Length: 353
Image (cartoon, rainbow, N blue to C red; front, side):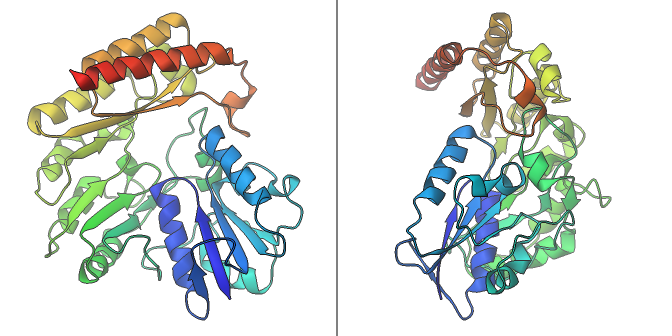
């Protein structure tokens, strides 16, 4: 059977799709478009409204006569079939390993039990890049986050299992190892270890490769800061720190249930810059959160001017179904656009100086 897998979202979703392809590759042909396929799998993301709209539009426009299966994070937060009735089956992020059975006997499948997805067969999107999920879920419930609804609480994979997957990837010629998950800062807290211990073990592997660590939340990073910086100094670690602050206002962070403070974020960034001067700092900001006043927004601008991040992911607030923030009264869309445009311009000025 000819199967097309369409992926939306983060590196963890791309990893899931690589595993879907790996599990289905034997006896089937993975093709590059819905048009040439007999069966389409859509692996969805629930983080942003813009992505949500793209996903629904894609699903609606899958050619008639194709078998359609929809998985990923969005399936836990909305009723996909409201947008297309002839979907064969819907499944969640805890049902990846069961995809051959779901296709053979189409029926919806949702589970609250996390699967063991480490060291599964996979078909890589890029033969030079290994995307390895080292943990799923997280230890918090931010008011705006729909990913928590889909991925649940923290589950970390053991260091030995992760190491075996990295070793296999290096043997297969991968030059970059992307360690991914929902919040790598809390990796290992559920199994009596932590991210620096994992990195130290992985950098002991022989071979020509570099490790890129994806997103870590500040309130966990501060607990492991000194050891994390030490681990980052290893030449096999790419000098890139993605640490989302989301707002420069303590008031907004409190409403977001973000746990960390602006000062915690600044401490982490400044310590990394001091100890690793060539580090690239990436952060995320949500503009126009329902509780954000003009003063709160100005505090965010001040933070960006002070920190001068190398990469800044700016999102205009859009309420996600099922989240706490979905119930809040929203700011006027024009005001959100104004604030976002102002921040974009200030960041461009920082980058150009």
